[in-house]
Length: 396
Image (cartoon, rainbow, N blue to C red; front, side):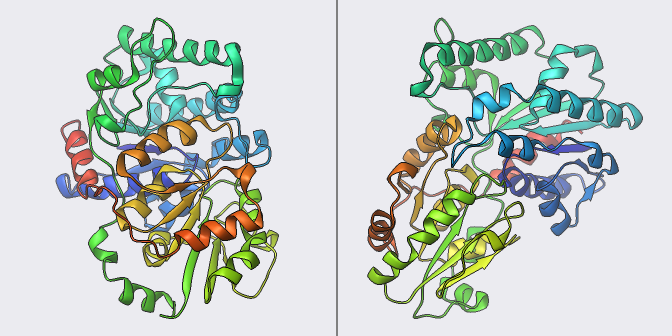
């Protein structure tokens, strides 16, 4: 089996490792190769997974997104439109790998290159193929005007046409979530509603957290194990696996003094991730700056508050752990601004702020208001990985 996990953020890798573990319970003899690139390889190596040697030939998608980004502002859709060379190069690596090894199953978690070019070249499919995603539909940003609305609708129409013309390409399409987590919007003028179309073309696994919430339920023991004192108010700041979050990290750090003046005993744990140099974050008393943290979900569950981007995985890990959090979606990142925000609304989770409104005073006030707050989120299912594995198991 060949598993491809999107490198745009680390959330895909976390859930894919959990799905792979559940799949091994159903097929103990399955051999899984991962075609992956940094930063996904950091998660896979920590989990003891086998990364296919051809992975070193992949063009880095995270680097492309970072290169397209402004300050807290990767225009996600436009960046994807300018990824043709990267996606084509990576598909050719994939093509060489599946030509040389007769895999029984290929699983692509938002592997846009594989999915697009298999539909464009259906004769190349000689294996069972499963597609995973946690959102469906490109959506225009409000300031994109008529042109962006037209182009996003055109991309959606092409995808819909692909599925209609070649339904045999996707042997299984799995939505990581539930039907109500899909936005109730149109793909574009004259196109179906996204939720209705997704219900017809996807199976739903429920959300995949990648960890057992019971393992982090005892917060006192967890905090002691992680070295957090009972008298500390711990605020974890993390911006995911890409390098686009550096501006947000520094802006939050700038607000630490104003927050500490309002919150006695405040300790801010700043996690830069694998693609941001921790030395780029100014040092200060009360700040604990760390690089890649493989068990970040434990720190999130132990926290009194988290400050994050609008990435789905981190937000949903906090929701599952029932911790208060502030999320600041990347500007012009349609998935974070629409799809993720909609899903968090479904769970009644998170407190949203806009990056343009972040000043030391506004951030300090928000931290003081949210830290340690009782939550009443809708429970997150704990069997998502098992349900996803069940949907894949019969393809092997």
